[in-house]
Length: 124
Length: 106
Figure 1 (cartoon, helix red, strand yellow):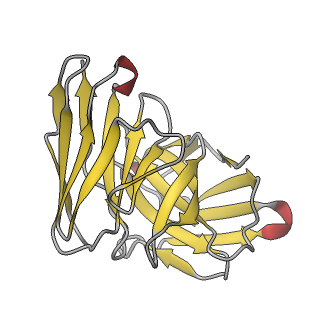
Figure 2 (cartoon, rainbow over the protein chains, first blue to last red):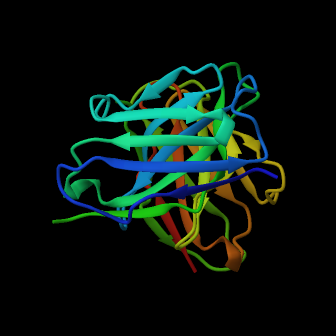
């Protein structure tokens, strides 16, 4: 059974760096095709795709956040870490990590299992 | 970025009704589209992948169709447990954008 769980601070100050950890079980991030993505959702708003790290160490980031975002993995701990620099109040959101699975279509991709999410507020 | 426009943004229907949600992409995304269901206070759940494939364990009253820029999500017979917000997501081009969501109420 695949599970993921996000952890990290619930409150950060403007200009600080956010570090969130996604701890997972039930799969290996070294298995071909597998990835872990990050998605966030401001209160009452839509989902926003942030980035993803794949089994082969490759990473993709949202272009609008590329200069602020870093995703790394620690396979020995079954963890993926997201760091986001220069946090500001508009970054207040629930942050989710999710398991990426290749689908039937060539290059296909779906987030089939999600963590419960962690709410992060940005305020002084 | 590819813009994903969902309509309507909300709808109210009765139990047993057929519900249809539209998702339009700002450019051709082939069939690279997924649909998710999100209940209040919960994480999204994958329902449909590759535009029309039903995720394992998802009831058959849910379905998806479409291609290129126009996609449709259908609940053939609305059930009380289907009260949720539904999102489409494209994965043709970075960033893999989501639609604005459609809130379904009874």
